Image (tube, rainbow over all chains, first blue to last red; front, top):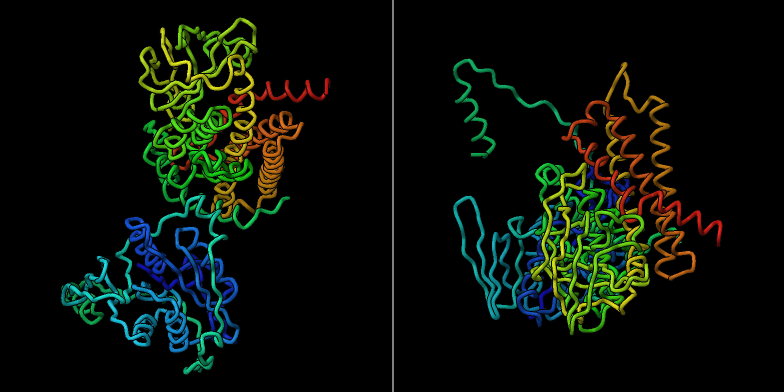
Length: 254
Length: 378
């Protein structure tokens, strides 16, 4: 089986992240670049399949600037077999439609039985790219799973939502996205770290993929997040419980 | 020379992450409960920390002595005791790889590299420490077996380890009459003393190892008869660099905690970090640690390339790094005031743990003896 994992390099969430007011894009200098934790969990799922069946081939696919090669290298050190890097200055600032088109174009040549991604990234948080990729490729999407069982010809899993639990399954080839219910990623071992640079990484440009580079959306304006303000205080005059319940209901917290 | 490679940065990053997640949060508790975390050691083994500089073809990680020093420093930032034990384990695994035969490597190294089997090193005796060539544990050849009698003192991991590399006397010819043996746990005639009660290093067991008419196959001799003292000394060169690296990690952690504390703690209406006298202490700690780190890296490089000044550089690295580490920890305790004396803050533990680094792997007086003799006699 061949599994391709979509990984994304994002600013480390441990520190304050910011957008560049001039370009409307993520300020990549402001934080350490790391592999998005959710896509690390996606990779962990793929590697757990490989642990059980050594013939499994795991490739990672990422789109991003030059430094994204570090995220790919880290994934290779953790145990992925190969990497695909969509690298093209013309794609800087790509929106979700363009990103999905580029990823799908790269996946067309990858002949994956299964594509695994995170349900949403910690920076963009649109949560729509995997669905768009699946649409481009005409693949069934098992989105936002809480658990997954990957078989030889099918993939199945469970998804939790407000109403209950959905059991979903699809024949391969298919695409699935993981949530934070999945296992945390493993540490790379020393052999993995030392061997990562000997593993193949293919670099693809927009023209090589045969895709346009014009985003369909533009950022009109952006504002700094306002500083946090004090919350509302409920003073108990006999109806505090009712007010509290009202508050929770209007915020859809219960 | 002084810039780490991309691989080394990735290694440091991984070890720091592993130690921060699996060791640091438990270090104080392990110290207080005298708990030896063999499960965490096995996890470290899975990542390649059981045979860091054991050759790849022997099942090790095949990395350099500098890589090892970087790894031990990172581990020691979380817990000097665990880092130091892993360094001793690595020294033993390296001895078997370096001086053993194919059969010994095949038998022992897979378990040691994965740390499913732990190793101890038995040189010191109750009456013989610095003058190791005077050791009295005896090994007598009897057919195709050796019969060992004697007692080893201060043995890290004793009682928990699966493998002991033991130095014993096979002839009354001083250092030339010492041979090395691989002794598996469970051998009849092998027993252990009570758990020693110590100032620090509480997360690893220290016991006497006792041999009473213990018979082991002659095939368990490591290297030739009479080569044991050379093996012991070569092992200790690396042991000294490693323990120096452990002191750097402990000292650096104490320094980092001190900087954070001085920024946060106010007295006389301002943060303590604004007091120049205290800032100068931070500067001295940082400078001494950095100087020692440079020395440790240089010694590790000499060891890797087997240069002719390896012995003196390893001795110097051990001397300056264990002194710098202890001094940084002790200064950190003072900078923390009363809180430094409380177990909860973790500083007093680092002081207690690093104190023994000035004593073991050859005391710092012996380091001066080695350095002085080479300086005088060349």
